[in-house]
Image (tube, protein in one colour):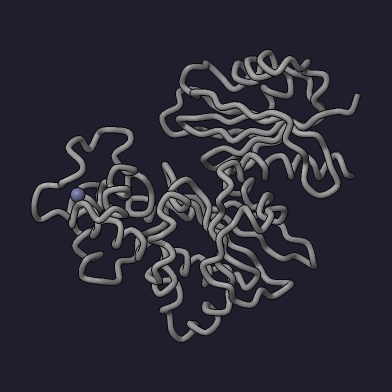
Length: 328
Ligand SMILES: [Zn+2]
């Protein structure tokens, strides 16, 4: 029986685990399941539940690779709002897997972009990809993640980043007003305060001059989705302005990341929000904010920009990383 790969995408709310069969280019998904992270006392318990549900013994697993939403330092990571640490050594010891690695979640997603099919992405800007160019990935969901794929002597090597916590750069009167409100509230404004699910709520607060026609409870966990749906269906002027501001800021930050990484190989937009607001990303505002950065606007206009539709791109990327061991 061939050995299998275990991959995971570990978030503060949800943990997705998948079993894959090694393959030359793209490992083949056999089974994936989602778990409520906080219902378990550590990662080993979630893995145990997954292996039991799928009827697999731990000794069938050759390698395990997990993406986590946070910085990985010395094989371990802390997740916001999760009371336990994720530690690769605990997993290795408990299950006796040959290899276990923790990656930052966006670094994991970066391993996945090279194997995505055309049907799994939507092109926002065709551009002209440079064969040896770097690639950048930005992903807004619960938080904001950023990662780079550097071209190092012909091999693309993912590099993690905590760029989502770098400072937000306001450019317009609307963004200055937002930044002033957020500085009052949080002391400083990082990019994630604007470009994330929580960012939509923050923008919502300053975008309504009359009561919101769509949302009554800002603490509702589905509030960001209620705002974006109301905006796309043109049901509330304040929500329309919220989404417009969000899309402008998202495009501008994707452009900042592209400048910092000279990502002439392409820019990928991942995360849970982009596929849900696709019409708003395609109306031209996102790419205008992305490109309007003279003197390098021509370079930015030549970069391919794509939205990732595969919601399991992070899980797939972790599996691609584990798969690369099985090929060596
Ligand atoms: Zn509204």
